[in-house]
Image (cartoon, rainbow, N blue to C red):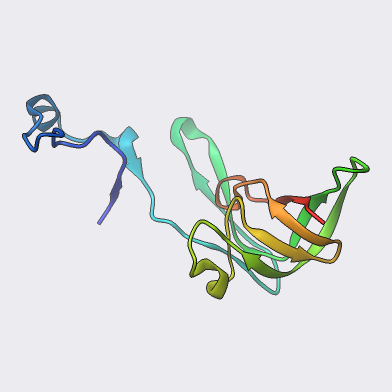
Length: 129
C-alpha cells in the first residue's frame, strides 16, 4: 500500500469533494513509508531519488553526531552513546529511533537533535548541559 499526501476526498461535513474524486491522484502527491534512523555499530546511508531528479540521503544507522556547543560556538564530532528521550513517540526510546527533537547522550554530554536524520543523512545536535 502506497503513502499518499494529497487532499482528503471528504469534506468536514462528511460529503465527497467531487472535484478531487474526478481528478484522481498525482505522482507528485506520493509519499514513502517511514524508515527509522537507529543507533548502530557503523553508519549506514541510502540514497533515494526525490522530485525533480534531486537526491535525498537517508541515514539508516547512526554512530556519530555533529555536536555544537552554544557557549563556545564550536562543532565537534562525537559518538552517540544512547538515546535518552524522544517526544515524537514514547516507544522510540526503546527502539533507539532518532528523530528531530530527540535527546541523545554523547561523549560530550546531553544534546538535542536539530536535524532530520531521515531527510538530511546526518545527525546534528546542540549541547544542553
